[in-house]
Every structure is written in structure tokens, then in C-alpha cells.
Image (cartoon, rainbow, N blue to C red; front, side):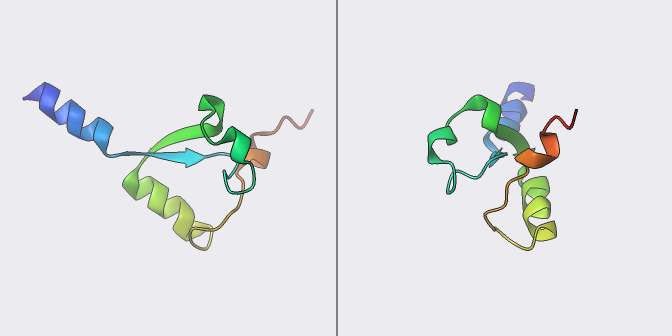
Length: 65
């Protein structure tokens, strides 16, 4: 039963692109460009950003030194 629940949890994860693949298609499948979020958090991010827009969160991770 626990294994079944774990498989369900994994199946419900969403991939979010740090740098949007629409603007950076070469980075679409790069692991370093992906964040794993639950659907609720993924939707919350896009809602806070004004919808499913093509914004990049990559600059927030950039080194400012």
C-alpha cells in the first residue's frame, strides 16, 4: 500500500522550467533547468505570476556576486 501511494505521489509531480522552454528550447529537457513541484504549488506559482506566462525564474537564482 505504501508503495502504491508513493507511485501516485510521483505521478502527480509537475516539472517547472526555470528558464521557459518557449524562449530557451535547447534547455527544455536539461535537468538543471527543472524544478519538481506538486500541482498545487505549480499552479500557485503561475497564478502569482499572472497565469501561465513565459516568464523566467532563472534570474532569481542567478549569482549576484
